[in-house]
Amino acid sequence: MVNKLQIFEMNKNTVLALATYIMIFVGVGLIALGVFRYNEIAGWGFASVGVGFFAIAWVFNALKGRV
Image: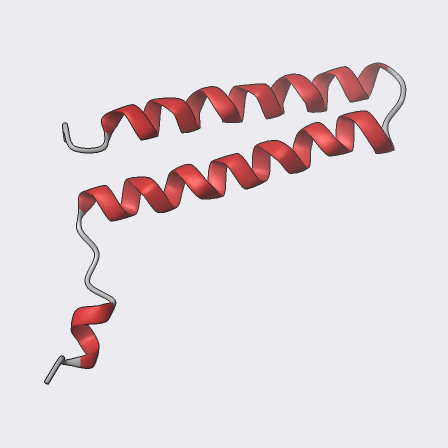
């Protein structure tokens, strides 16, 4: 019988994968804000920060299995 706490057991790779998915979700949201909501200079800022979130998510994905 599987203990219920074993389902929620997270190691370092699981935490990095979850952080990667969250960063991708936030990055898409920021890019969408820059494209659809702010059509002036502020939109460029939101979009560039969204691309930065993608870069950090890429680093988190590369760190899986190495930390």
